[in-house]
Length: 146
Image (tube, rainbow, N blue to C red; front, side, top):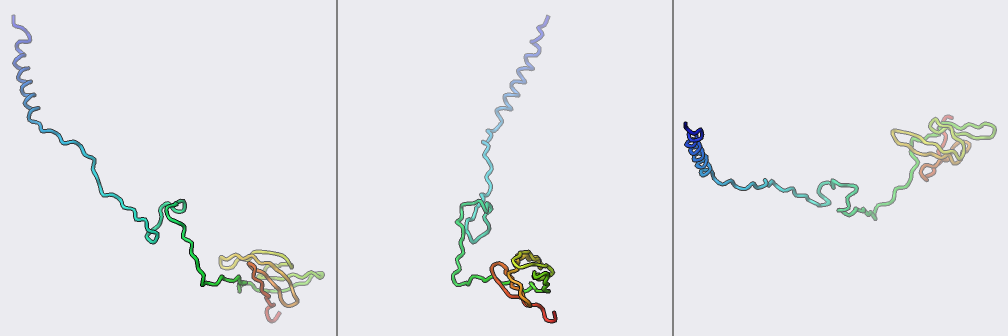
């Protein structure tokens, strides 16, 4: 009776020889190197570009602009403030300024072309009114014909 593994022995030896010969033909693999791309360069010049971390950044010093030859602007009462009329009621004077009725000492806000100003009626005279806007005072006369 033949042995069961004896017929497979030549086949196994052939497989081992083939496998070993294929290992011998392989070339060594080069080690894997991380790819390197171009490096970013950050230009930190105050006159070039914007600070991406503004306003919390402390890298650049705060620029203080000093102007010595420029006069400070004076507060001016805007020209759009017009006295429309004066009313006297039981010895109490009221002035109509741009369609707003105000008594002496009263403050109110006027809007004109997106500009909001705080107006204070300082004194009401017979034919004019004195108003104060941002610390500047001006006497506004009643329009002609009234």
